[in-house]
Length: 281
Image 1 (cartoon, rainbow, N blue to C red):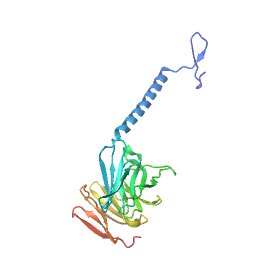
Image 2: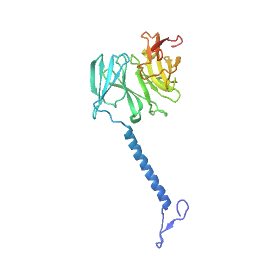
Image 3: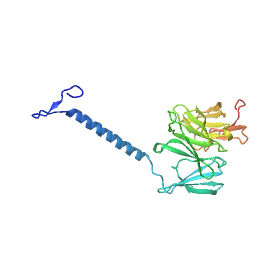
């Protein structure tokens, strides 16, 4: 008797009972195994195909908003290096001990960031690597996952740093609204996170001390601009139809005294100014 209650098969003429597998079950087992191997093979092939090789001998340059500091990543055949310049004068040049990615540098040069890759082939990052002005690693800011204590992946469209290097913001695209998250660079804590504006992130700017954060989002050519206070509260928003163009280098500006800000109006071909709301903190 088999474990499922069916009669066991008998070897003819031997009087010994043995378990056998029916041809149908054997074929099902074969196809399941073949399908599993095919999925593993195709998945491995797909990941390798999606991963573009690093272009050896090429360089990528990332400049602070004020144009003073420039971080350069140099791609090698097997190893990469990076360097930083201040007003054209090289401060350091050293081996890059982490995977390369889009860098950001603050206006005072005190904070530099690189993405921590969780799924680099698909552009998914697991956090932010923070470095000081000497290019020395200072901390890792991991992105939290759905379960407490686990790391998560985020597909970050833009990363920016406040001029004083204290705060880091990331922007992610969303189905209906983009998401802005502000981190404290000193301790890695999240200051606030907000779904806002339209679906695609365009640009973010942060003022000193994280007092104000200005975000530009879009849906096709239409754009929305949003100003957040220190706590992440939306204190101002403006929408402009048919305003997006890849030719615009920057859509956002803060006045040096933080009394106001400006957003770029494509049809007028100029920045339009607005005052900081008195209700803002």
